[in-house]
Length: 133
Image 1 (spheres, rainbow, N blue to C red):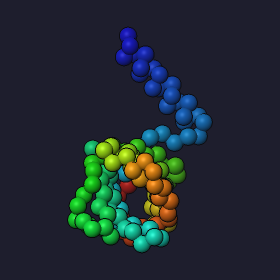
Image 2: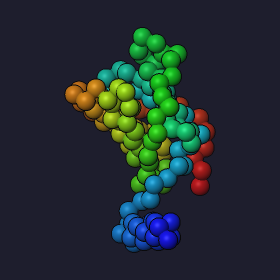
Image 3: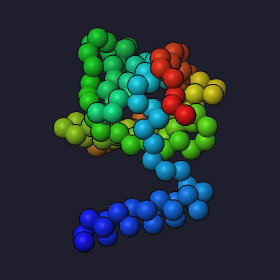
Image 4: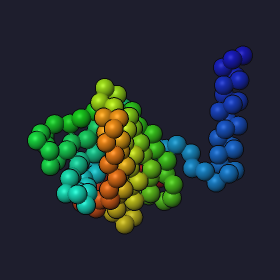
C-alpha cells in the first residue's frame, strides 16, 4: 500500500510541475563532456554520466586528475539549456552550472569548502556527445 501511495504522489507532483510550466528533472546530459574556460582564466573538463558528474581542473596543478563521481541533478530549462548542480561530499563544495549549448556559454556558481563563493561566466570550448531528444 505504501508503494502505491508513493507512486501516486510522484505522478501528482509530475503533473503539477508540468501544468505550472516548470521543467522536470532530466538525464539528457548523460554521456556529454564539456570543456569550458571561465572569465577568470580557469578551465575545466566536466563529464556527465548516469553514475554522476566528474571533472578535471585543466588549469590546476593536476590537470590529468578526475574529481568525482558526484551525483548530480539537472533540468532542461529550454531546448539545449540546462541547469545542473551537485554537492561534493567530503569537500563541502556545492556547484551549480547554467549550460547553454546553443550559444556555447556557461555560468557557474559554487560555494567552495562551505565558505568561498565562485560566480563567473565561461565560454564553452568543446562539447563531446549529443544531447538525447
